[in-house]
Image (cartoon, rainbow, N blue to C red):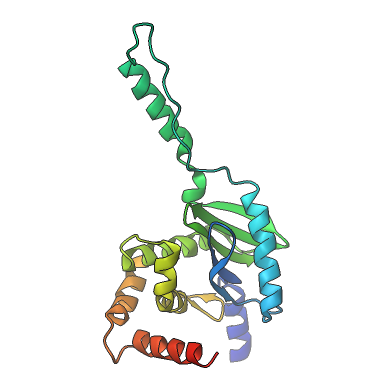
Length: 215
């Protein structure tokens, strides 16, 4: 009886199949897979490459120089024209992808965001609620921004790789979404980011050093 209740409850739980953080060239920075059949690195890499090619083909470059206004006949530049072109440039350059976008990819629902530093993907099942996936993506990114003081360059992310692990683990357990409030995630993870010797973050750092030394 209780097994049937828990099985029914499981049907209503929202799930994530993967969280992927790739750089601007599609190279992996961080990933966490929860869906079966993707245990091997080769299969994960193939999925990431295909997803990156799919998305990068529909993303227009966001960094470009604003148009240069033409000089007037007197040789001076019209100030009103400069302001008009600058406003138009900013409006055109504000890409929706920095806030979030959605696509269907190989029977998966994928929400993602991108900027000059790279791509963040949250992958769900084909029937998963895209609003929930968007909340997961937003929570992950905002939590990371708070912990790293909005410095999310690739080098900084790799230097603080343990924070990515802790954020994902606080948000998701075996694919089940537990928390989507970035402030709650920040409150849970920030004490472990202080560098104290007895924190889980320090233990992960020590483990990473040992693994690197034995490779």
